Amino acid sequence: MASRRTQNQQKILEVLQGLKTEISAQDLYIELRKQQQSIGLATVYRSLEALKLSGHLQVRTLASGESLYSAHREDRHHLTCLRCHTSIAIDECPVHALEKDLQQTYGFGIFYHTLEFFGLCESCQAVKAG
Image 1 (cartoon, rainbow, N blue to C red):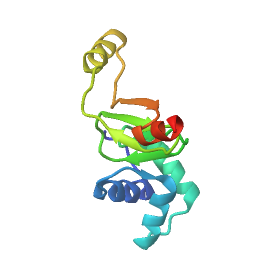
Image 2: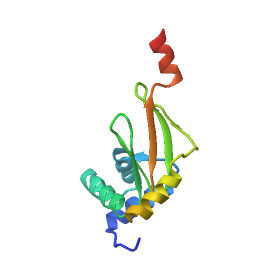
Image 3: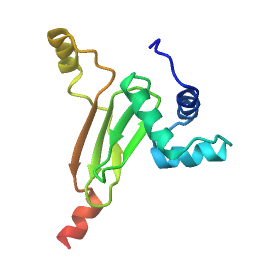
């Protein structure tokens, strides 16, 4: 993407690129403060939104409603427990062919996709059954 980024967006993108995991906006704000970056929380949210819309990062929303951000655009697939909010990454992806068809049929530029299954993990099922 060749779009221009603000200085704050660039700082945020650099921090995200250095992380090996997804991070919430609030945790990102804390990380920026640790790195002596004086960016307000509202600016963090605005910058994350702009970076998401430009395709520079991806966001995944958990069952709890919390959004996690990552600079590494890749297809992600998870099993997420509605009770304990554990999220298990899965490698299988049944929708790659569908993604290609959608891009061709609708001329839609897909940056990435997520596939999330919601239910109860083994531990939470055992609690429910007990």
